[in-house]
Amino acid sequence: MGLYLVQHGLSMSKNADPEQGLTDAGRIEVQRVAIKARELGIGVSRIIHSGRKRARQTAESFAALLTPGREPVQEKGLDPLDDAAAFAACLRPDEDLMVVGHLPFLERLAALLLTGDPEPTVVRFRNAGIVCMEYLHDRRSWAVMWILTPEMV
Image (cartoon, rainbow, N blue to C red; front, side, top):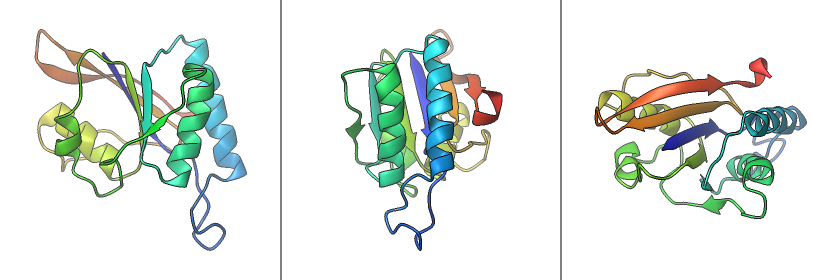
């Protein structure tokens, strides 16, 4: 299973857009990373997002290239301060899943999966970047397989 954790693209301030949609630069970065992910043959069965505008827009950009014809789905439990343990308990090790969300939730989820504790920061996320994690069945644990940031593409 590949678990692809994606922090939404760079978003506008609340003054510029109360819903904090993506900036033009944010859209471009997300598009570049999504194109590179497709070129690398990254496959996902589902893309889920928090429902916040910036996460939805990011998820839609990835879906257009990685899951053509399948829309990303809004899921509860992916907001910035939501409980990473509750979400982690629902993960299926047999599914290639992309989760588009926010900090600190994604940092807490990665820490929880890697160390059993959501508090230490063990992975630094970047807007529009992908952190690929894999469940190692023989060790019954998660590992970071690779990270792709906009600066790399």
